[in-house]
Amino acid sequence: MRLIFAGTPVFARDALAALVAAGHDVALVLTRADKPAGRGQKIVPSPVKALALEHGLSVYQPATLRDEAARQALMQVEADVMVVAAYGMILPPAILEVPARGCLNIHASLLPRWRGAAPIQRAIEAGDAQTGITIMQMDAGLDTGPMLLAQAIPIAPDDTAARLHDRLAALGATLIVQALDRLAAGDLVPVPQPEAGVTYAHKILKSESPIDWREPAGRIADRIRAFDPFPGCLGTLRPGPGPGEAGGGLEPIKIWSARVAPGHAPAGTAPGTVLADPGGRLRVVCGEGVVELLEVQRAGGRRLAVADWLRAAPLAQGARFEPMAGS
Image (cartoon, rainbow, N blue to C red; front, side):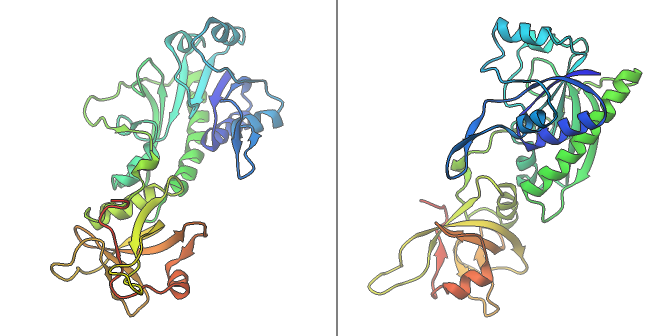
């Protein structure tokens, strides 16, 4: 098929690679503008643009799709289908009507659950047992179009957003090739999304990083997994009394990995309390249950296993995390 492909990050790059490998005529690639990255803030192309240039594909990076110039540029392609994967820009109705057979979106959830910008992270954060990929026919709504193809995968207890992203990206690449094959064969049947079970995966914000230790241990552990690699979860540690101090200074700690610890905290122990542990573990009391921290990072430092971190900087008796970081 003759395609327009619209996508920007790694998730979309995998799909573009699969479409090229399958022999589709990718006549035009839409992607977001080049952006600064890394410590040097060097301007770099998106992963999709980099792959497109490797294959000699035409690349178009419009600032908006809402003007006539953009519509005309896409009309000239005379595409059968536009494939959209994490493009990062809303397609207005005039653009959705350009391809002869419409626009297909690769969405990283089992719709109608987790419509929106961050379905991978929100599924982990919510403690979902499974997620998947839905190939949907796009309409003017936010991930509301009819479903064409879907496949579920389990969410493992140790899945982070990064690990689950990579599995879903590979699955999305496989399913979009299957969907186009079936579309060409005429055996794809659009299924309207059910009205029941709709949830929205709102964009992940840095302001969500602080951990509230008054929440249940399971929810805290799930959020830590969901926010790896971005934005990470933040705890505010009071390491314990120091010379001339009643409670020691506060230190921000990034928490990258944790799990629910067996057993219960002593009755009356306040959330955020660090439990004494002769085994060298770092266990923190939560609103319900106890969470064991496994990987942490000091400001300006690198990620460390908790055992290594504690050997370098043992915590004094009375150390605790503030119930709400930064409060």
